[in-house]
Image (cartoon, rainbow, N blue to C red; front, side, top):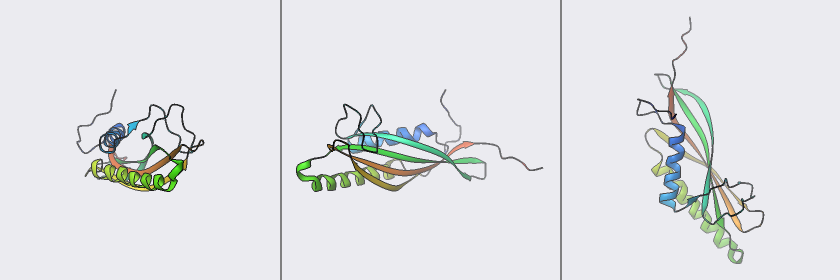
Length: 155
């Protein structure tokens, strides 16, 4: 059963992740990897160039609206695998940095709305164990109103 709300400003966790996936695929031309890409440089077998995976950790921000709606927060990691050309490593590294900026801008412009806030936190770049891929991990923070709960009334 999926979570729904009659309050149009409330956004479910899955809706945020689905919106990010859609933007990355349609605006940045990447394909979702069928397997999670490990940000430490260990790559799954059969990995292809210009694929991505999403890792999401969620929290209650302890922020509430006056009507007791919970503000949810997510650390979202977009992990991208780009083939690395050993013949011109610096050029590939710079190209990867430009590409990661495109992803950050696309997510900030297309996912962020009045109801969903998106902020870039950091980017990490790691060579895969075999050296053939540059693993780019973009960490964003997202907040949105999620769930309405009754406030406890002190007696």
